[in-house]
Length: 196
Ligand SMILES: C[S@@+](CC[C@H](N)C(=O)[O-])C[C@H]1O[C@@H](n2cnc3c(N)ncnc32)[C@H](O)[C@@H]1O
Image (cartoon, rainbow, N blue to C red; front, side, top):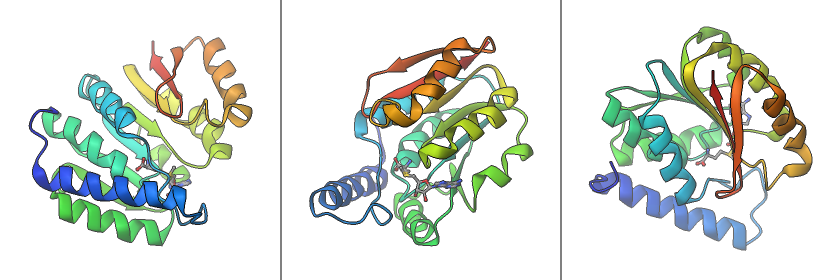
């Protein structure tokens, strides 16, 4: 999967990594920043998504499409499409450019809007990557866990970087008898939940 990443994808990943690093250094306001995952998190997500059972693959929080590019590698392997949701029009137009430049239209579908209004459309979710505003995480968790297929994963980013906000969710997942969960200290900290 990673030994033959097509050049258009690699080139766009590098461009976005440079923009994200520059944004973090030059004080670009939070809303304008790409706020994307680091490459090692992308690789980890792709490895996980490649092995899940049959079902939908969803991402909440596209931004410029960086994490979606990693997940597109798993989708290509599976012959499936990632559905990725983004709220902000400015981010949607950058993501469109990303997916066009990287030539991943066959593996990624971008949906513009608040993903919370779409979750009831999916009742068999195999992989769910949550990377949106932290105050929405608990709401997404409650909507998505019942729809995860057995053996499917919910992965939420930032549980270490935003521990103060997200520790209650980590504690909730730990006690939730529907899932096995663990915090993986990779990147900004991932909560990984596997549906039993
Ligand atoms: C941390 S960034 C995502 C970074 C991206 N996953 C990456 O690593 O390349 C979070 C994004 O989620 C979007 N967002 C927040 N709440 C959302 C919602 N309810 N539905 C869709 N997108 C949302 C924000 O506009 C923002 O662009």
